[in-house]
Image (cartoon, helix red, strand yellow):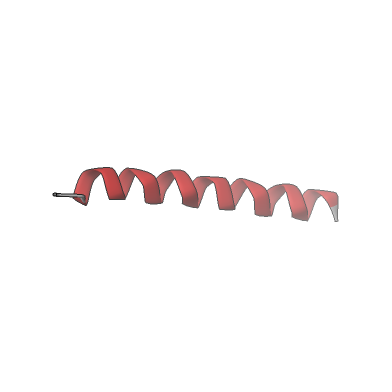
Amino acid sequence: VSAITNQSIHWIAFASVFGGVLILIYWDP
């Protein structure tokens, strides 16, 4: 269970960082 939770947190963090980078790249005010 601990390993699964750790993996979920890892993917959530990765998705957050990846999404943030995409926003920075495509954000064109």
